[in-house]
Image (cartoon, rainbow, N blue to C red; front, side, top):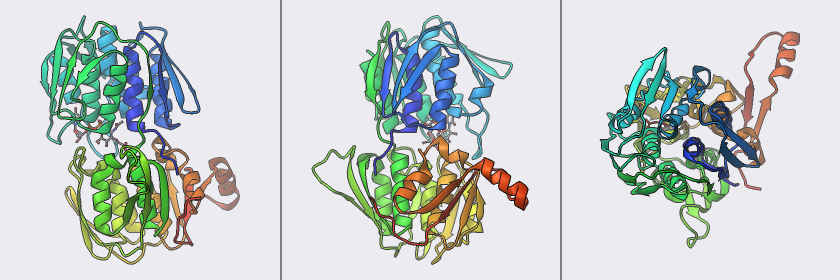
Length: 443
Ligand code: EPU
């Protein structure tokens, strides 16, 4: 299977186009609801987007617009990425203050601290953050927080600093591959950036940025999710563009569990190569702690937890990025999982099987973990609120069905008609997953 372009790179890449004085073309942009929301937000900010078959062209046609409204920001926290580019290029940004999300508080204090250090004036007005500066000024900024570095905060400050007067140094910068991708695009646009991918990024401000043509990196979280799908179903998947280098912590944990993750051709570039993932179902328990990159990503914690429910022994998962990101635990328990939580740590007592049940998705990655659990469970699993999945996985049910899973999305309208005829069950869109054959094979 092919791995789609990264959502978490595409969103700040799209926002970075606000800095450009000429069209920016992004390739391999995934067709996801979060990407559509960002395109909608950019359109409201006078940046037209034109997308066909994963190629998106972004063009600033009205640079007088500066307000990211609550209606859009509340649907997607990543809207905060427009803050830095807007104030740098348009001198003022008014962005609705994002609220918390289903897995806890998600403050933006580090984004604001960084912009303030660059000389911006920051005010709160009617629920909006208003950030203004005639021209930002380079500075040395420590961007670390209680939970480590901030990914979108680093993207925001790095993007803003490209047009600042003088040199900016970001210390304790996020090292995620998505940050390197944003730096690569900005560099193609004319920015002067060194150190992206390390904890110290230096940006020498320039007067203006032009257009560029850029391929988005493959999505490491999507690749990791399907690798765990192969593991949990005792399956066999060969990936075409597997970001092996970006997933070393995950591959290490999977190997400890007993999953075989193998480059098909050792000589290929490890950033994007062919990889085969197979498993023989005798899963060993493991200890996993989520950490900033290059540690085990929080965005694969829920999926790994689903896998460890079937290991032979007790596993421990500690969540160090979002200590409350455990909404999937109660739902997995409904499927027979034995999970005990103590603050940011869960102990997973592995059992030989999970049983299908109706379960509810609460956020993007939790939804993915429930689908994976459903693939391995005995009997039928019905996952409701799967619109969360569409934020980060392109037609997940179609991809899994093509790999051999018995999975289907219900049409909500047809479902409603059925409910009226047969009585209520749920008004949410549904995914049904059953996996009578415990092997996933690539076609
Ligand atoms: N934090 C602060 N202050 C800030 C910003 C962050 O205290 O100003 C804290 C957060 O509360 C968290 C930690 O720092 O505890 C890391 O948060 P970060 O800012 O790195 O998260 P983010 O940039 O808002 C991105 C991804 C998330 C992913 C995190 C961590 C995008 C669009 N989102 O969020 O992805 O979980 O990094 O890797 O890139 C997902 O795709 O499902 C998802 C939630």
